[in-house]
Image (cartoon, rainbow, N blue to C red; front, side, top):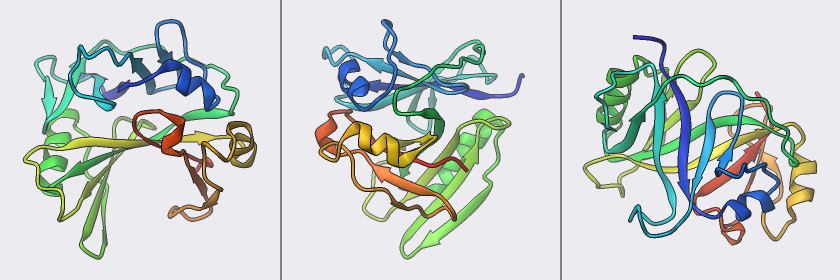
Length: 210
C-alpha cells in the first residue's frame, strides 16, 4: 500500500461564497491547494446531508474503505501537486476538525485505515483532542471528544486554512465576514474565524503558517 494522503475534502455549499472570502474556485468547484484541496458540492438536495463537510477522498489506502468511523470516504488515485494563487494569500489546508464521542475509537479507526498513528493527546477540562498527520507533510486531522457529543460515529466539523498574511486576508474579506485576528493555541501563530454570515456552510478559520 502506498503512503496515504487526503486528496480532497468535499463541502456542500456555494462556490461564489468561497470566492467572496478570497479563494480561487475552478469551474468544476475545486479550491486547489498543494496537497489537500477542497471540492465544493452544490447544495441541490442530492446528497441529503445539508451544508458542511460531507466526506473526504484519500489515496494510498485499502480501496474497499467507504467509511472511517462514519466519515464518508472515497478512495482515489494520488493526484499531482497543484500550485494556485488565491487572492487572500491562502497556501494550504492546515487541519480538519472531527467531532467524536470516543477519541480512542475514532483515532483507532483513522490509524487502522491510513497507517497514520495518533501523534499526541491534549486534555482541556472535559475535552480531549487527538492529532494525526495523514502522510508525510500531509493534512492534520484534529479529533475532538466532548461529553455533549453522543453520536455513535464521528462527524466533520470544520477546517483551518493557512494564509501568508493574516491581516491582509482579513482586510480583503471584510470584518462583516471574518473576526479580528488573535493569538492561536499554537505558539507563535495567529488565527481569525470566518463568520457564519460568509455562507461557507462549515466552520472555517484562517491561520498564519507554522
